[in-house]
Length: 291
Image 1 (cartoon, rainbow, N blue to C red):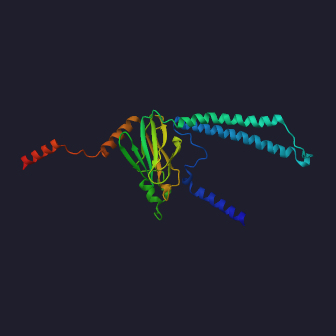
Image 2 (cartoon, rainbow, N blue to C red):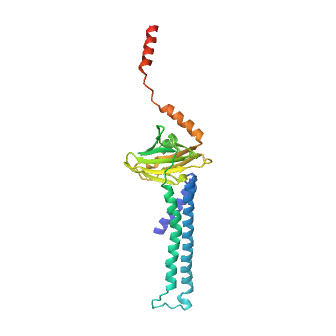
């Protein structure tokens, strides 16, 4: 009976996958190489350790299978009832793993140190996680952007909406106001949260940092000038009811386009300047003449 239920569950899963291919369009088995130099080094480390693990698995399981086949009872193998000590074998299986670990640890340590080096940055952005949206403050310019789930995705996700999510481009992965950054500039992120713990995760940047209330985490990235475009991520920390509805979109632009966008936002967000006494006196005089 249990096998029948298992077979039914597997068949239902396969049917669902074939019926809704769009649900798995962005699903991949491997880590993404990323669009920054540091993210590509992280990917290289990932693949290095992966192939080391594959080689070790092939050797260990191959030796096990060979031993099971070559020394089986039907071939006349007799179990050794005495403990056999082999100094050479013990030295090999001690030294070899140590060398493998050193070969992994040295490049990994160098990369980890570099990921924490947020010095000499040219742009600082404060990232604040809310339930359930992201706030971006461009520290030196005073520009602030609040990023929430886009209207189309928000409408489609409502219970009984009647909207097929497959018809919504980038369903649950689009926002109304993305994080706009320049290419070719080292950007520092100061990550915190207003209410509960969130996590800012963008695979293309190889960044996944917790945003914790009352605490500031630091991350940085520098995107190559030929990598302009949109890159998507999500909150990666279970933060409440709408955790799955606070995506991240990074809009990478050229330096010139970014500067133009920043000036436009400054003009929009700049509060009206209070009138000076001299200006008010001029207005009163003009009013008296027209009166």
